[in-house]
Length: 339
Ligand SMILES: NC(=O)c1ccc[n+]([C@@H]2O[C@H](COP(=O)([O-])OP(=O)(O)OC[C@H]3O[C@@H](n4cnc5c(N)ncnc54)[C@H](O)[C@@H]3O)[C@@H](O)[C@H]2O)c1
Image (cartoon, rainbow, N blue to C red; front, side, top):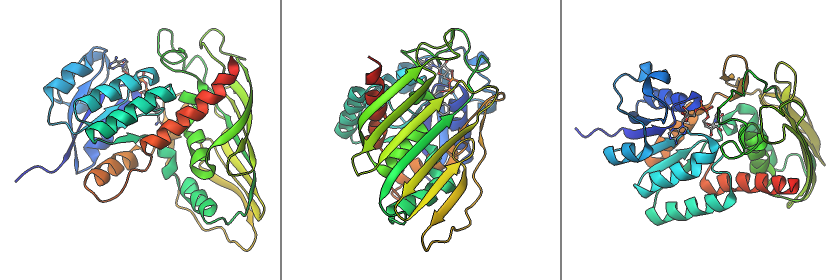
């Protein structure tokens, strides 16, 4: 009988590449057929992947595995565009870690190529699957909050020397791109997903505690108007001492107010809406835990399941390439104000 499992290969076998690998293997309809990283295999902690063939170059892996249908791009941010393009050019679907690229023009080229070869780009924005995100999406979609007046996004995390290692890609303008790309693009995605695009952007940036480790700002205050009406702000920092403080969103509407908070927007902290009773939500999965520091929701199994379900015709893409582009576009327009 023909094996109907969807065959995946991975470019970049660091923290998140290994998580993709684990989730592909855990899904009974997924199969991991190849791994690639520029670092020597023995340094990557890939023992759990046993005899899955390993390559040091994406080109060699793509050439050797015509059977792979999907490539997970889990390399540093600044390489996503190159690796996604290489995978599309060999006729693969792509699961691209966030952000889709560091420039809107690169996202446009990738979308154009994906259309040409009739393949999908699945963007990884796994926080959309958290119960508070699904709940607020429905509340906003059904206009239960009435007219939206204000949205305040606060992202206050700790990223210190335990995180930024000498010689690593994190903190480099070229490979990381900035704090909004690496740390907070999930929350910009949630804001865009809920309220749409922004205009009339104003911003202030500072580097308080990372002058020795990163080539860009660690903190910022951004304000704007929504095209759909209402105004908003993003306050963010990775200079918080010792551990994450919060990632929260407060929404003030004509019929009520909501605040979702916690370390990674995992708890509804306040809900007071006219003629509305807050339902009981399912518990949120814990954050990705990297030892000393914590990241976003540990929801990658949903991403892999969405890829498989989409390719088998059972659903549609949760975060498509146009939405991936919009997040990059918003961050690019905010950062343009640095110049
Ligand atoms: N969705 C999420 O919540 C989430 C969380 C963490 C990281 N990420 C994203 O995942 C990506 C990887 O982050 P990470 O924390 O796993 O980083 P990492 O440094 O642990 O892993 C990156 C890997 O890519 C490899 N690499 C670098 N250049 C390469 C090349 N030219 N060819 C092949 N491999 C190459 C490195 O050797 C390294 O092993 C980043 O884009 C990051 O933004 C997403």
